[in-house]
Length: 635
Image (cartoon, rainbow, N blue to C red; front, side, top):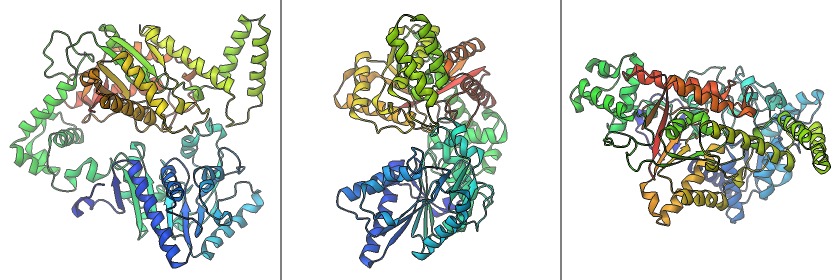
């Protein structure tokens, strides 16, 4: 856990604790909750907890369950009040917060059922107002909430208190913001299935808690965290109201904290101990801040923006500028597999061996071409033995209409196959009667997986990757038919280990996008890392000469200060990359899970790659059509 100096905190208006990762942070929160429960037990009183749902607190609940199963913690003296629930919502629905809390916590501990309170989404409209008033009264009658656990939405909402909620608001029925519904669309298999309303504790109810712990993980939350911690208090960002609370902690992982001033631009907060990475970051930031090429920055520019001690250490702006300029220039290469018969001392990849075996891991069947399609094409064109490992089937991201379209084709081809026609008729009946959010049958999951497999093979053929070089891993953790996946297992790691050991690649490309809103990219990367560690422990010789390059998925790009390889893409190759993305027809026009960007994936990829090139150009580098960026993982 990072311990800042007091002067570094002058921009922050809420006590903020930064941990190395979400697991470490979750353990600290679980320990604090457990400590309160034990303290109350010793006093012979009740511990009252305000609880949240969503992916953020899941690991906290896992630890609390673990403490109980190990005999270290009883919940007999615990009373809970959940923040919110969708409305309307049946309690046994797969989307219900009642079901979520039971599955993740209550079914595994010894809490008394009458001490559990979750807003009822199964009320009539006439009952809601009185119910909300009673919910408030129940909280008061037990003496108020001791610890309130929160997550934070992309709009800055806490609970379901959307922008416009007031500081004094109480438990009530609220209409959900469109951004909130869009963020929930993946869980409901489409935005149209997300309820438009919810019952939520109010901001005032939350503020009455004696202690508040807000948790956030991942780069996707970094901007809203910065606004909540450092910004002005305003109704448009309800989380800023927490600045008024006398006992509130924001508990973050490093990624969620990455936009805070003391992390992103520490030279504005305090005197810095300058190292090569920080000098590069600061110089790029200053160049973009002033809209001046790096080589044009002056001593006065550095002094004006808190970097006077850097000038004093190095000697002059010119020296710093040249150092950073050369570092950036050396990241640019048109030879992502290494340039043969060339001096590679200043290049990101080695010249030898050539050709290389290049293995690209693609979490979903289209991430390879969306995220690094230009680089993939370049590797193939330059003669490398390119393999693509599709880690998951991606079956939940296929619309039902796609299945029917393929079934119609298959039944026309197999008109005399009565068994097949009977099976297809059953599938069509299932889809016709399927309820919103209902899990697909095993047959439908299989068909959807085959659709995406066919699209991936079409993209490989277009890119001249041999079909036998496409490896469909279908990792078991993914195959639940639901957005919520199983934890990674030894089987997932072994499948990946075996493929790596079979191919013995000289370079690996993997999705390092930890902001993936559905978590699949995170798990896929963890599986690769675990397999690599296992290979290292087993003293496998080839692993010593393997480079691992991380690309970003569809959601976000690396910061230029972090990029260690940038591959230029010309207009012709950009057109080829887009055509490869088009081969994934089930994701064309409208994706099942668009995240917070409704544009098509090819549009996002094109803009992102062009923006990267424009940023390099504005820093004083050569002008390119587009660029794909990579960070090297050292293991």
